[in-house]
Image (cartoon, rainbow, N blue to C red; front, side, top):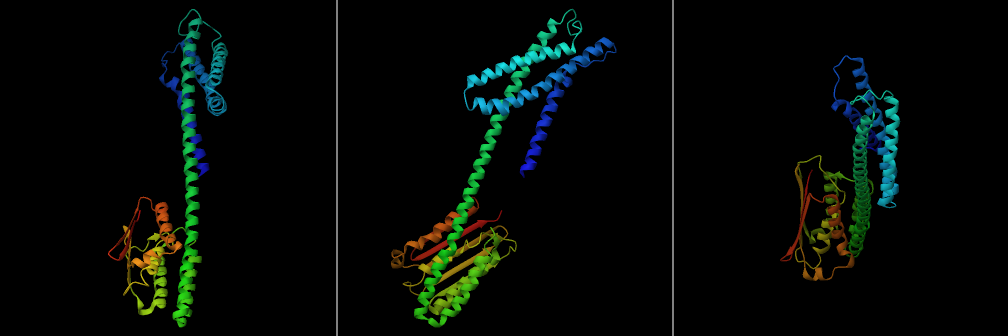
Amino acid sequence: MSKSKLTSRSILIHLLFWACLLALPIILGPSSQSTDPVEMKRHFQWNLFFFVFGLANIPIFYINTEVLIPKVLKKYNVLLYLGFLILGFFAMVWLNDIIFDLLFPEREIGPRRGGGGGMKRFTYLRIIFQYLFIIAIGISYRFLSDNLHEQEAKKEEENERLKSELSFLRSQISPHFMFNVLNSIVSLSRRKPENVEPVVIKLSELMRYMIYETSDSKVAISKESNYLESYIDLQKIRFGTDIQINYTSNSSNPSGTIEPMLLIPFVENAFKHGVGMVKNPTISIQLIDTPEKLTFEVINQVSNQVMEHKDESSGIGLTNVRRRLELLYPETHALDIVEENGTYRVALTIKHV
């Protein structure tokens, strides 16, 4: 909801509150069925008195909520705040006398014939009740409003922090990816220089996706799947028949979306640690997307020697993707990573909501 709409709603709530409060004495007060002019006049005067005196409560409410509570109670102390409230009470008594004298110049007209003292005592009791009621409502409103604003500010601050963190995490993906691919090209130039050119061409396709397709917060799962397939093709060119790669992609959810480049770190990790000193390496990758959930699984073989000689950057990708999953899918994802019997298995499930 926009700020302007929120302000309009707040104003409407205030107007309805005061309309109900001003109408309450008239609604709950005794009705006059008499045709006697004196009785009709007295009934009208009392309704007018309560209405005018009710209007006087409006500035008291806003002086209390907008001035006294934030600028006196919260900045100074309770005693000073109570002092101002007492002054306000005497001001209401003084105002009551003025309104009473204007509306009841003839003291014999009132609930008790024979004098106006009883009428005034009656109005003083109403002053005490109304004043305490308005002050209590004002305190409750102000503290509740401040609490809501603080919660909204904290939530907005947290959202901005998470956005910044997520932006930073996404910015790490490309350099990390390029670092791994360039290492692959250097290695390939020494062993199979004739394959460097097709690898560079495939790399340009991947970079095009990284630059032009990943600017949005979400991309179609079909695009992410094509990106994974292009990366796997690059690795096939690099390793040839030295490694067996099984990739399966099945989607029955054409409208499915995902955070861009969220799955590639798992695949990179499989190629980084699933080849080399591994005998007859095999990497299996499966992507299944249904209207209910996305399931992604990567299985590769590992060697103890490979795991013992990881470089310092080897954990960046998985640490990064774990954090991104926590930020983007805090309650809707399950990540299971198991390493046993020379096999490394990653199983990721993301529920579509």
